[in-house]
Structures are given as structure tokens and as C-alpha cells.
Length: 135
Ligand code: 5GP
Ligand code: ZN
Image 1 (tube, rainbow, N blue to C red):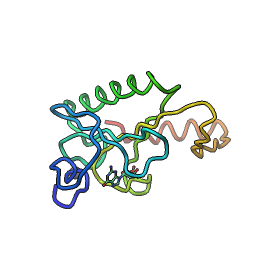
Image 2 (tube, helix red, strand yellow; image 1 turned 45 degrees about the horizontal axis):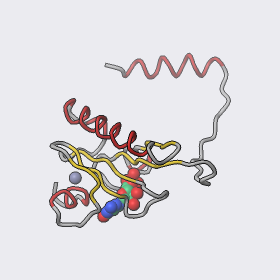
Image 3 (cartoon, rainbow, N blue to C red; image 1 turned 135 degrees about the vertical axis):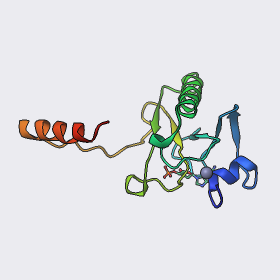
Image 4 (cartoon, rainbow, N blue to C red; image 1 turned 180 degrees about the vertical axis):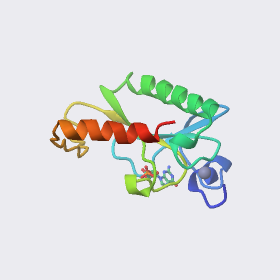
């Protein structure tokens, strides 16, 4: 895809620190890491969001994410997988990517996650609304 930074990384037009690649996926170090070893897993085929991926590509991306996750656990205590879809959700690069973020005790990384209290009506109405759109 023209003008896509990650497609340019895949062609080598933009350099990257490659960690791993196979037929369908590519893994490289994030250029502005929030933790040591912060990596991005991407499909070689251009899709904007994860819901758009064809099943074979989606399978390959998950398989690679698991492989990298297992690798991270060999020398870290845990990891987060973060995946943003659309600018509203914080997606800056419009080529599907999974952030793999190694975690360790007291690493001082904080993801803001504020739980909201709702009554029973919310659960009923929300369930009905979502299921109406489900195909
Ligand atoms: P997003 O906010 O879209 O989920 O995350 C995009 C990520 O891509 C950011 O963490 C950013 O640091 C990373 N990134 C953007 N441009 C480049 C680049 O040219 N090279 C690498 N290695 N990472 C990039
Ligand atoms: Zn792309």
C-alpha cells in the first residue's frame, strides 16, 4: 500500500530492527518503545484494522504473536498485547499491528483503565444493542 510506513518497512524502503519473519508476518522493534523489547507484529498483507484480516492472515498473526510472547517470557515476568483500531482508539499507523510489551515487577508502566459502575439496565440494554448488529 502506497504511503504506508509499515508497508515501506516490509519492502526495506524504511529500515527496521527485524526480530523475526515468516511467509505472512514480520516482527520488529518499535522505534519509540515504552519498555525494553517493545515489539510490533504485523501481517505482510496490508489491512487497516484487525477485523478486516482474512482468516489465514489472522491465524498467522496470532501464531507469531504467541511465538514472540513465549520468547518474551523466557526473560521477562509477563507481557501485554496492545492492539489499536482506528484513530479514535489511538491507531496512528493504519496497518494492523500488535504491540508486544514485556513486563516486569515494579516496571512503572501504567495503562489507564478506569472501571465504571452501571446498574442492571445497562447490561440488558447493551447486550441487546450489540447483538442486534451481530451477524
Ligand atoms: P499505534 O499508535 O498506531 O498503535 O502505534 C504505532 C507504533 O508504531 C508506535 O508505537 C510507533 O512508535 C511505531 N512506529 C511508527 N513509525 C515507526 C517506524 O518507522 N519504525 C518503527 N520501528 N516503529 C514505528
Ligand atoms: Zn501497510
